[in-house]
Length: 360
Image (cartoon, rainbow, N blue to C red; front, side, top):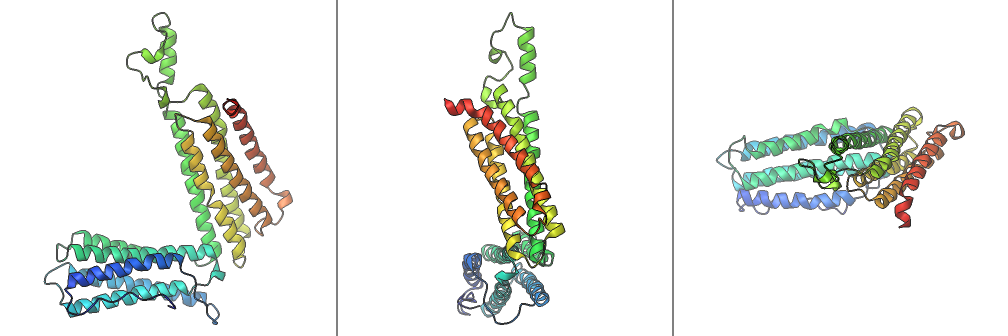
């Protein structure tokens, strides 16, 4: 594994079993930051995709097996002897080192998006094993229905997910784009629900004020009604929410269309362009979240305008990158100008509605 040191198995065979497990947990934790920043190992051999996935799946199966073996050995008394414990720790080290080595054998040329997914799966497995060892070292020889088996299950689940990882960068890109669409869809639905539910007293206040205009001059003073108007939107706020919702809908439409183009026209060998599309698309959901949070009362119109502008910038960049890539064979006849116009229309309306606050 190059310059990456394998975890030390457990100190001497004279160390108590629990102490050996604790040292192993520390070593496993030390591996996590190295895996996060580690680069692919160079090789003169031609990459064999089928062999890589076979090795990765086998490595995950080995980790799952060792997790079960370790849990079985330490969830009941008597605890294994120190020498036997060292053997268990060495086996854990071996299978963890092996799966990390397989991850490092995946070249960058196969796609950054794909490598991120494999790296994430590898980190989940190492972290799951570290959690298991920590639980076993903190509460050994207790009931097998305790947290040790729950932790073992998390390792097993992480290992079981390995065969489900997309096998090429195009499939990985489609998965990431689908996730982005789902995130934005959820944000849009939450915004719509908030519009419906955030000011439940508005209609009641208006009706009551009309019915009781001779007796009450301030609806906030009425018994049983909220006096804090920060809990709901003003009329100006409600007017501003409309183009904000439209902008989020446009965001969802952009991502869905990009995903369709990648699915229909994406080429597996165009890994760099696919990575660029995924990278910029990944920025849409956080930008949508920022805008969504800023429209909740009490609303600051300036913040809404700033967050809207940030989202528009990300969307336009995503559309430009997609338009310039191989997934858009006829950019001049595409839907992209229509979405650009829709985005500009939303932003212009937001600017109009927030201009007064800007000038204050």
